[in-house]
Length: 422
Image (cartoon, rainbow, N blue to C red; front, top):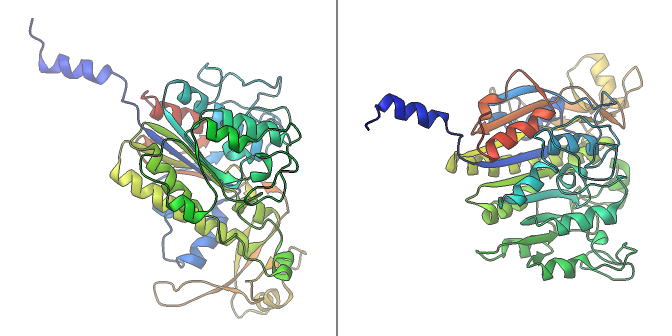
């Protein structure tokens, strides 16, 4: 029996799309105003960051089950499972300490489901391994401060790539590591030894990461005792004469590139988080926040390059809140603006941050060659809800439009990763 071309094409169109790759980059705490400031400083008012070059944009709606402003752990749990959860949860639904049922009806996160299906997965974080933006995809605990339990579950998860800080939670008390003077585990476990027994290659700094041989199957990178950045406010950082980031640790772009080399060609799920933007923002550290955003943008550049060469890849990004409610005040010669620059405080008492040298930040030139002065303004030491967007590129990214609920991050990633129609 002969089938017409129309019938063949109709049958083909009914088949699910093939499985593809997903890269989710979470610049924690980075709202639109954060990226505006980063653009002024690093690219200029008329320039473009890699973040700007992601063509698909939607407004992010990030409320929790019991709160309008997301927590890092609650927001990450929603991204990982596609369900609304209480703000205090960490990889659970708030009713038990077990993995919840995801929006798909499956028990476990999208990353758990991928591992069960034999799909490669990786997590990359500039902060400690226990940071929820990545950890909630692999760990479920009753309390966010169960750092030992979180780290154990991540190592035991079977993830192909784990790159972060947090050596203190891999080692037992009294045992020194490459970065930590002593581990903090009270259960006696040495998770680095356990990871090696599971077949992981272990690296500790940027040089060792760059030297990872081709063909490596499983990689654990531990790049600091805690975070790869110096998590503190501007005054303390200046007093100690510390840079925002630890020089021996790889940046987010280097970690992302290393992860892609192991996970490609795919299919794979890679979740990447720049934690510094959130921690520095919550400390109202403008220089640290802007450096964190620069590093996040470099990671976007790596991911964009991968998508260009591998179009069967979805690159999606969103924060879950705005750390410090950061914004920009451009300075001019008006008396009020000059007073801002001098007094570093608004008439309503809101603090301003100049550059590290105590002078206003200076933008890169605009299209006319003009540089502009600005300061950073802060609304809070907490997280705020406003000004978050979802952006994307590559496969199925055209679904990123309009108003985009935080639960939709999960569903779009799952539809792409497992080859279902968005």
